[in-house]
Image (cartoon, rainbow, N blue to C red; front, side, top):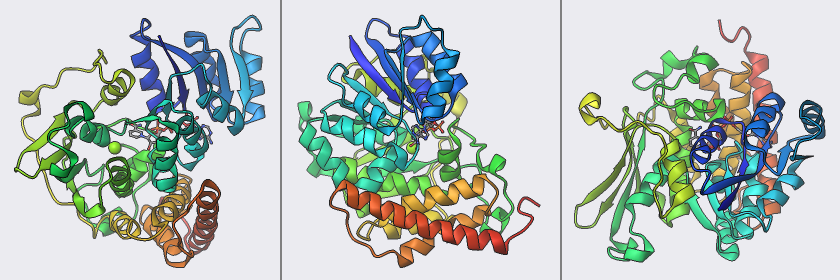
Length: 398
Ligand code: NAD
Ligand code: MG
């Protein structure tokens, strides 16, 4: 029996994880759930899964949860980041699903890495921001880091594993990272000026949380994923190629030196990579519809349009700068939040990101406090840019 902690339990990845776990009560037991402020959702999850511990982001939310739960319950309610860190490194647990959105998930994910857990990584922002600090923690702790991002899960599945060490990683010529292109694929930049948060979050293939949905719409998500692939599989950016694949059926590919290209295919349903991560090296039922290739009919592949989607170009530039992806990620989190609150336009997101990339003094962070300092300085500069832009703009959404 594997004991599981789900960080970000009330989100899209968290709920999909609980769905898969719920189908395999013989293999997995929910030990702890953590979320930020969604008290009603957490209350339902606690009633259904009876975890030993439920952690909320702040004391008020934890109190509200306690008030809602029956006094006779088995679940201890706690709050704050330190409590999330404690459950992530707890000796009684085996698996940590890191599915908090954004930089906020870094410390608990690092704790799981240092404690040598099986770490299922959905929270790409943590890895991309902390880079070598994150990978070093995984190595030091002896953690098993399994990517949940569908593309990286696909890469993992198509790459040579240690057990079958031929062909080796040396024979990997290119990682082909696929992208759906998001809801605005095919549009020109001038057509994107007035798009709303609702349109940006209306992804054609995937149902996801608002932040990653906006990242998919700007293609910044693919920039984060480019860096994620480099860290996970020890590649350089030039060894990763981004290809638009609107159907989201081929989740990524690996090209070998002999010309072979291995792909992983499946319906766009996150329960596939989640089930893979939970059970690896076994395979378990994830209740995903079987892929019907005849119904899909066509699989298309195109080059990304870096003029219409400058966020991807910015990410490709940032990845070459020391600490560049930490800066880019922090500024993007500020920009996306401002766009979702209608403070800036969709086409303002890249402008907010560019500002700190140009002005923060860049250096590769060597430890967690350096990562946090770079992140907060970048946020400060990005917030200044948002303030200037929202003063200059009025009537956004008109
Ligand atoms: P979401 O917005 O649906 O859920 C986010 C979860 O994180 C919620 O449970 C929320 O309560 C929690 N949370 C937010 N801020 C927190 C904080 N400060 N402290 C503690 N908990 C906090 O997001 P999602 O779509 O599930 O995405 C989660 C992560 O997985 C992101 O990093 C995203 O990039 C990645 N991811 C998601 C998908 C997907 O299909 N949704 C696919 C690939 C990768
Ligand atoms: Mg992805």
